[in-house]
Amino acid sequence: MKKFLISGVLIAGLFVYFFTTLVIFPQEYLSHKVIEPQPIQTVTLSVDDISLGESFKISIETENKNDVADILITSVAFPGLQEIKDSVEIFSYDYTQSPRYIVPGNEINSQYTSGGTITAQYPSIEAYSRNVAPDTAYQMTLDITPQNAGTFEMYIKTIAIPHTTALSHYPYEGLMDSQSEYVSIFTVNVNP
Amino acid sequence: MEISKNQIFSKKSIEKIFLFSNLTISFGILLVTIGGGWDITNHLLNKPETFFAPPHALLYTGVAIALFGTIVMFTLWNNFSGHKRVHYRFSVKLGIIGIFLLVDAGPIDFLWHSNFGLDGLLSPPHQTLLSGMFLCAVGSMISIVRYGKSHKTNSYSIHHFLIVLAILPVWMTASGFLYSFSLPFSETDYFNFNPEIYFAVVFATMSMPFLNSAILVLTSKLANYKFGIMSITGITLLIINATTSILPNPALVETLPFYVMTVIPFVVSDVILTMTRSRSAIYATGAILGTTFYFLYFPLITHVYNEVVYNRVVSGSMTSNVYFEMLPIIFPLIVGPAIIMGIIGTEFAEKILPKIHGNKQES
Image (cartoon, rainbow over all chains, first blue to last red; front, top):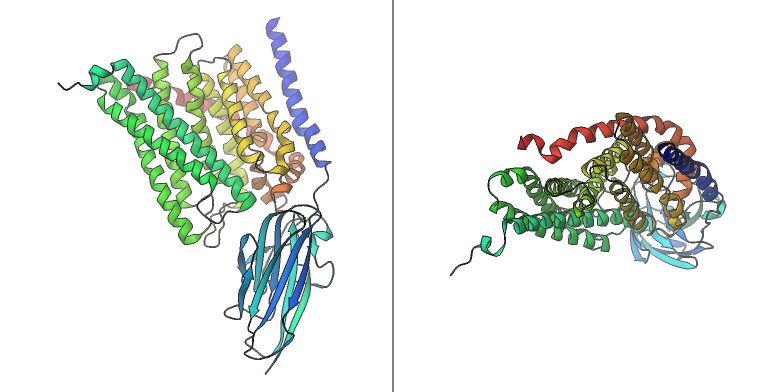
């Protein structure tokens, strides 16, 4: 009789365990609101017209709004270049992580919410910070010396992870880059 | 007049200090594993870019303690003679090889960080460290068990409870190996040692239930099926994992009640083995313990299955969402293999038991 009673308690215990871990807790946790970090960026160009051989500076200030962001990434891409070489140097940088240099052919994340990767088409610099509280700002200034005359183009965007809504990304509209993400385009005219 | 060691310490007390040195090694390795677990979480949340991080400090404090314990253990073993020397020879050898690997792993890790920056989980320094930890943990576990076997009584004694400290580092270092070959944390700027994603999923699904079941059933067997030893071992692991992997991430703190629930299968399995030792009862515990692996290895296991199911960016605050979203997809697929591997784990525990006790050697 005692054995039957204990067996009953054990079976009940296992039922409670599997029912709560497989049904109750998942429903409970998935019903919670997901955090929504919202980055905004401000870009300042030192000049918009230079002669070949001259340099210009571009400053990007990024601020996280609304909720804490696990990761804040600001990307400055150079669609007209095959490699960054000596054309681009970081003048100042206060993000918490070291910058990452992306070269064409690198596998990079895209579609952060649904998941996926793509192959980078052009070089870029990604500035990172981790665990970014709301209303925290970071800045990066690049010193750029174009090697050819013509229009020097830069695609700039900022992404907050978790990427939960359209506002987890800045800008909200504009040109879509190869990662299928909106970018702000900045150009400098390089005279021969 | 020179006083010999034997005049100061009796043979019995020397053997007691030998036991204590092995407990020191186990404790040191436990600290290393706790530091290692904390280090993984720290890498996930903060991506430290320097070798000098708090988890590394804890980790290498553990190495120093294990080194001290090994020196004492080897010195005392050298004074043993006859049967006692043979009885502990294998475990001492494992400890010595282990501590060499462990101590070497420090400079290798520092050099790796200096040359290649952030290193991945499956990096050569980490594998050297893990191998050393595992050998040290197994060596001291065997010594503690063999000592306890000749001192244990039918009623509860301290030696039953020492099994918890002896087995935990073995479990945690073995888990470290399994994580190394399944988590996608081994790609750095210089190397990509990430396991292939389908291999990682199959490997985790097969090995983790096996390990859970083998370790916990072995714990129960080593404690002569005394109720509580298996539960305490499992609960201690839950506490360590919660402290190193859940609490440091504010977004996961609310999942603690879910994580704590895994106490239930540990206690249920413990009660079953206390009540009956029939083969079917042992298989039942293996099956129960096997199925708990997806819950026990939360939150890190999320990264293994996410690679195949979603391939999302699993940042700190998204971990529980991805984990619980995957649960209804993953669990029906893994429950069968988990039960089978859990049962195989009990067979392994049965086979390994006489080797740990050293029955063959003594006969």
